[in-house]
Length: 92
Image (cartoon, rainbow, N blue to C red; front, side, top):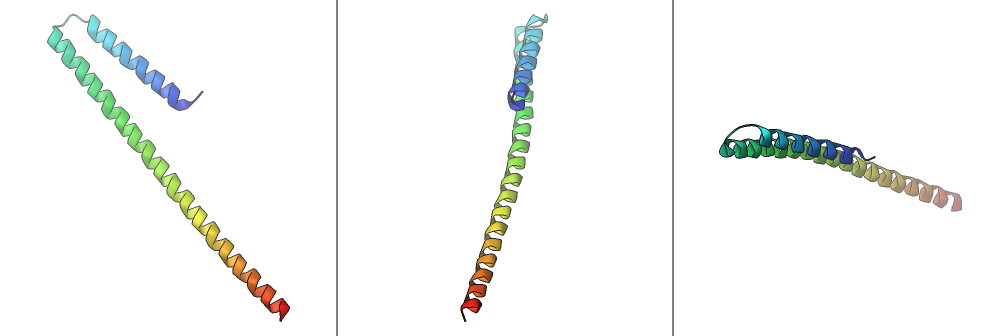
């Protein structure tokens, strides 16, 4: 199973449990709504942080791959030049 789906399921279950717990608590409606709103904001901030970390990781890997491709192309050009030089010397 995809770890992203598992994490999302766990977060959704935790959020549902918190909301159910707050709704069952004997408190004024205004206080309950404020608690739900605050918890929702906390979850959004947490998810945003995790998403930002994920994007940073993906960006690093993409940059690394791009550098690897660049190095591979440069190596290929160098080998092609060497081969061209060797062929030219063989013909002469």
